[in-house]
Image (cartoon, rainbow over all chains, first blue to last red; front, top):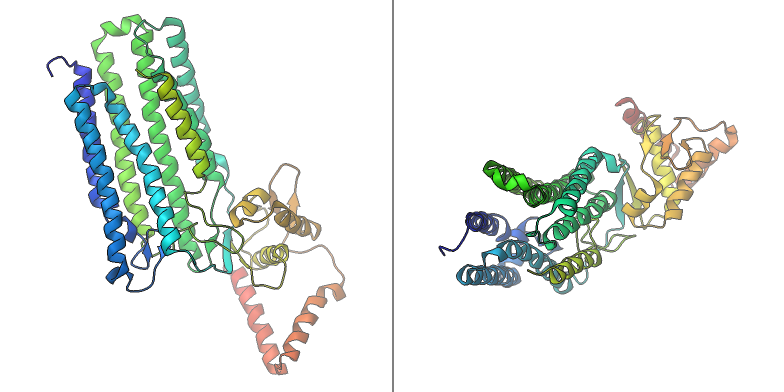
Length: 321
Length: 128
């Protein structure tokens, strides 16, 4: 392992932090996630009283087995990367774990709905909010413009002054993710669920908190990637940068600060959401009188997610190291 | 501000929207100048056809409750409907009273019910 550079050791350090976050999430959030809406629900399916004294035990066991299997496969892949010394694959491992985890999670949710919620009650009364949702109330356009300027600046620097070490797959991939998440944000703002007629106000507040949390998470991810892109462009497009040692560490420091702030926000926000929605009906999971249930959160269709991931995989194949 | 719609209600959906918005205006929960969400937003949230909401908004505009500028949102324009004939105004009341009589309610019960409904609307309006 003595052949590894300081950059490789930094990658290892960041991976160790990601592993800590993954384990924390497993223990604090995911282990009892099916009970997030109280004992009346399994994930987002309404269950009969006493479910967790009978059939529910088997369902919880199945959920936790799948969860642990996913973590185990991720751990195996990580061990293989570390042992083989191909540490440059660590970012792909972190991103790939998250990308694979989402379809597994939603696949299991679809399975529980098919098995447990085949005949869900369809409420005849539904409530809709008359609050206007303008994009500008949720998306900061000055921040979006700033992002666009940084992306354009980074690309201009790389295209005009990029050194021989530029691996084009990296800026293409980063730009794809940053830009590709903007339509996702717009979808999150535009789409909504009809509310149950009981405790409509509480359901509305919870839905709004969920919406804001998702937008914050997307922004954190995008800013983290923007810092990476700009840093990459500076280090490979500005010849003097290689002679300024502190610049390297400044970029790394900013990226780490953004990442840590994002993780903190994600953990705090998800905890707050879980507390708010403890005994509320999971939204969007039941067919309403005028609308079918949705599997994913508002604004995200499985088709959109599939197409976005497909593009990502295609880029990884085209620009593989 | 919330609008409740019921699939079992005998009134068509657009009528429920119209009545719901009128009730909110009458109670003062939708004061003059309030911007209502776009047709697309309400239709998307409820999962109904755009035309259903567009018809409701157009009727409310025709009755003078909303102002809709092309390409802009609908704004609550007045707490009072356009000038209508006294007879036209009383027609829904007459229908409701007839239904109460046919349901076997006594005159006292009907008067109490009307007073309660009126107080409910006025209380909501005053609380703003």
